[in-house]
Structures are given as structure tokens and as C-alpha cells.
Amino acid sequence: MVGGGIHGAGVAQAAAAAGYRTLIVERRDWGAGTSSKSSKLIHGGLRYLQQGHLGLVRESLRERDILLRIAPHLVRLNRFYIPVYRSSRYRPWQLRIGLSLYALLGGLHKAHRFATVPRHRWASLNGLDQRGLQAVFTYWDAQSDDRRLTAAVVASAAQQGADTACPATLTGGVRHSSGYSLKIRQANDIRTVETRVLVNAGGPWANQVAGCVDPQPPKASVELVRGSHLVLAPALAPHCFYLEAPGDGRAIFALPWQDQTLLGTTEVPYSGDPDAVAITAGEEDYLLESLRHYFPEYVDGPARVVERMSGLRVLPASVDRPFQRSREIEIVEAITGRSGYLALYGGKLTGYRATGEKVIAKIAACLGSRRRKADTRTLPLP
Image (cartoon, rainbow, N blue to C red; front, side, top):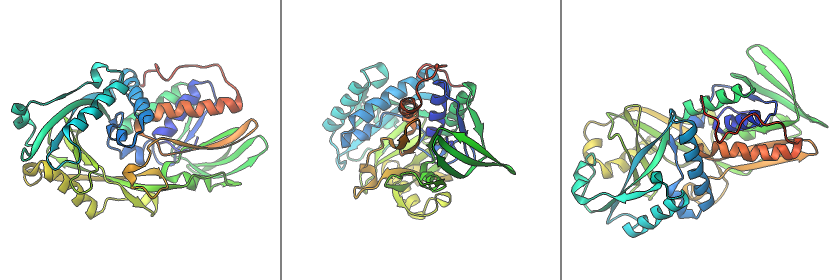
């Protein structure tokens, strides 16, 4: 397993829990890349209903409920507010239908219900601009510390018997008749690792990882998209706001984060070095102007930027705008007999455990099943 982001961690945990000998290699630190620069949301993806991705939303809501059970110290519910204005692209009746479908896909449990906020309570919504405001909806979704969650999943994998190498780098690999011989550099040592199945969970670096292997395995046709966030102080609110960017209608979140406010995200195609990704002045202006549209007194008053972060999403190559493309995981495979290669592209933080189980199903078809040690649906995270 190459790559110590959330999906690599999830596959390593699933493999070890299923009884396979497992090694996970990460060149920097667990969750140091995109997995630590997300919107920190464990959610079904309400906005994915717009593209008709019902299966993804249903799976994500199921995974959210699992994480609330197995990691209550890392994943918690919070209240979200959606304001609807005369200028909004969606009317209140459309939001009501969307939230009803969201609740239905989640099983109509208490945590999936929604409501409207009475007009007399609008003044208590942290300075939300009420000019042209027609309705405010509220529902529940979950938040997490993405980097701590990744580290916890790696720790769980280790508890189930996985070996870990971090920081360590794949410097080369050769496929032979029974699998792969990989060269792993750790500190000043280079060791050879033999494996029947190589899983590439390199995220934005996945195609670079594939380039280290001879002969080169298949690659997906993907596009890197920069997602940037700002951290603002002081905190705007202890709850969450789901906002529509006035310029292009994209979803923008203003979320409580470590006693401050996390504001994001952007979606800008990126073609540079993944290690050099950084927010631009234009993205910062875009985020602040979007927030000012709803909270002018906060943005023009006490708010100040205390941190900037950018990560890279891996999305299918397409002429569609980034926020219109699927967030489902793509698994590229090259399996021959009882050995092979699997590469992971894309996916959501929320779905890491489901991704792991999908990969294990493919590994089991290749290697055969083993004596299972644990079920990741019920295995508490440390």
C-alpha cells in the first residue's frame, strides 16, 4: 500500500482486519496531503443530489452513521443552516424536496431530519443579512478533524497487524510473474519488499507513483482541482452555514474549527507540482466576498485571516465544471491470476471505509479470502 492519506489508511485497515499481511508506506506523514486540507465534513453530500448521485449520497450517509458509532471522539453532529434569498438559484420548495430526499436516503432517523427556522429567530443567526431573505432551513451533518481521523485509522490498521513505514518513499518497483518487487527508502536504508498486490493510494501523486513501476500500470484520465480554505478569527458561530456563492452558485461552507471559522472551498483546475499547491489572491477574494454577501458585519468587522490551506482533489477528466463532476472513487486495476495492481482515484473523506471494503473485495477475488480478524463497521477507532 503506497499513500498514507485517508483512503490509503482505510484500505490498510480493511486489509489487516480481513487477515492479509499489509504494509502501508507514506513519504511525509499520515494525512499530510489533501486528507488534512478538506472541509472537515463527514456528510452525505447534499449538493450531490443536484447531479443525481443518489447512490453516493446513500452510501455516504450510511458511512457517516457508522463513523458516529465507532469514532464519537473524532466525528460529531452539528447543526447546519441554509439561508434562501430572493436572489438564490433554488427556491424554498426545491430545498424542501432536496432535504426530504436527503432524510429519506438516510433512513429518516432523527439525525437526518430537517426543519425551517421561524422568522422571529432569524435575528439570532450571528448577523446573517436578512435583506431579501425568504427562508432558513436547518438540518444535521457531521464534522471531524480529518488529519486525526486519518492517524486513527492507521493506528487501527497497526492494531490489526499492519506494518507501517513513515516517512518512507517508493523509489522503484518491478512486476514479475508472482507480484511486485518494490524498493522502499526509509531514513538512509533501502529495502526490497515483495508483494502479491500493490495498491496505489497516492491521491494527487497517484500517477507519479505509477510511473515508478516497471512496466507502468494503467493510469486514469484525471484532472487535479485545487480546493482552498481560509481560517478566520474570531469564530463566526458554533454551528455551520451552507451558503451559495453569489457569483457562480457553488456551495460554500462556513464552519466552526478549533474555536475559529473554516471557510471554503474553491474549485480551480491545477496543472502544477502537487507539492507546490497554494491558495491564490483570487481565491481568497472569492471566499471573502462570498461570506461578505451573507455576513457583511463580520467580514468588514472583526474577521481576520489567520491561516490559509490548499489541497488537490482528483476528479475525472471532463469538460464539465469541477463541482458538476462525480466524487465517487474510481478504482483502476490490472490483475493477472493471483497478483495485481489497484490504483485509487478521487473519493470522499466520508467514504474511506467503504473504499477499503471495495478494494478488499477485489483483493479477495485475486488472493482468496483469509481468516477475518475484525469488521471495520463495528471496530472502534483508537
